[in-house]
Length: 371
Image (tube, rainbow, N blue to C red; front, side, top):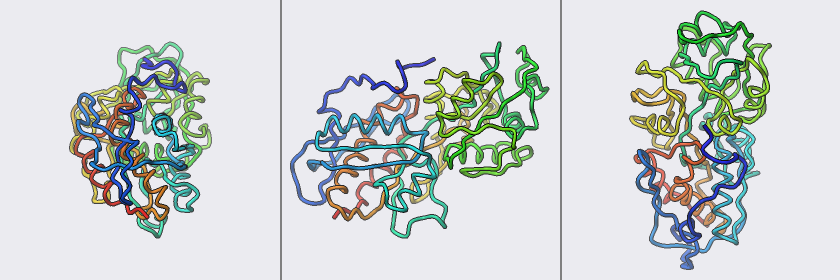
């Protein structure tokens, strides 16, 4: 199942420093070119990436925090960018989408990773920009002795996670899996303990896909039943599932693969049970309605081949970058994420942006005000 040798090891990326370098527009008039961003080409997804005609030499430091869903990609991308730009030191610490949004609002970081936008009441007073950077599946991962394959419908998932269904041989699970031999094992539900874009998108999907069953509403945190278990970040949920017979949890595909977890095929709008793959996540981007600020949701897509629990991650920055050096660096890093960085995504079990959304994100680079 795992397409790479170790989640935390550095990818062997077959590209020279010149290919990794990212070009960004020079708002300050500098013309020394040490970074470039080329086109992203991934089958069935983005076909054109970010490129500009002017370039700047970038250096300095950037700190980011937020989405643990996109942690693998943002850390790998930062490592590759730093290697290609010896004067740059970009870091990303994760911590959950809620933490990233809070840290950016308090200006303790230079950029945030988030799987969901700010609520209106929490939005910083100064203008911000949302840059979508990836799609990815939220798996419904499980650990049940003797069971390595499951189909689960939205109503069944809703019943499990709000503890209406407490045994693996429950009739609702059996109805989704008529040929399976299901044990009389108690179900342990694992969920996020931190404010999480993964939780928000997962529960928003349940509100839409299972309106007659799901009662816990939606949000970056929800009031889970008392007999459930909480883990910090996607890795924490994956650890609970991995170590507990009978456990089930929602985990991003990258962490699920890294932990060697089994995950269910989930019934989509078209009535088909779909495995969480990069291809099925990219398919969910078809027909997405994008708001003027480039926010959207990719779950519950009507596309017939789409995995239904697909979400997106944004990098959020302030529109006005008053520190010119940091501004040039953040623009160059975003240009890389929307260019050659897209080629990393499938290797890390994410999905590239669809071409229409990629083009809108690239065009928005010109809205960054530097210095």
